[in-house]
Image (tube, rainbow, N blue to C red; front, side):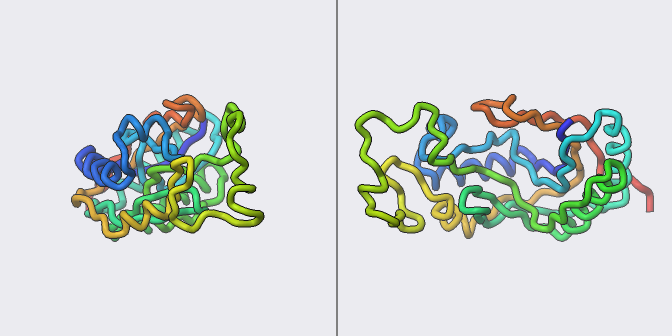
Length: 225
């Protein structure tokens, strides 16, 4: 099983974010789901803040991982958080950040569980965020180059590339352009009260993306003080 530990923002926070995304991406939700604009958008129901990624884990380790996360969550305290700001990883992945003082400790502890139970070194996550879109690779067209389409390299000139943030001729949008538009975004505040253990099935979701199934829930702050 491909597993990770995460926190899922409440529906109100995700809906507020979706409204902000709709306003900056210049199209309807249907257009975005269709993958137009050169970006593949994550479904709101799949958006989450990853605490630790465990990778492929034998199913026999599931109960131990769940018990470890129960202990981590039980010893933590609920904290306030909100979705705020945005950025880009590797020029392709658009993410929205999270405020809140409890993220570093929760991430470190969740990573330690994976190291202890499954022998997977903690990935050292320390920047809470949720991924909202990924740019499609230019070479990923299933049907190849359209017949009669101009050679972009010839049209742009040897070695030339579009200016950063520019909307390209095929409608593709640079994720950095959207990150800039979302730089001042701030969503509603909510209280983080739960950690979920999620199984990810690659290629099983809408549009060939991953399908995420919650296999265990751990409540934060259950250990009596």
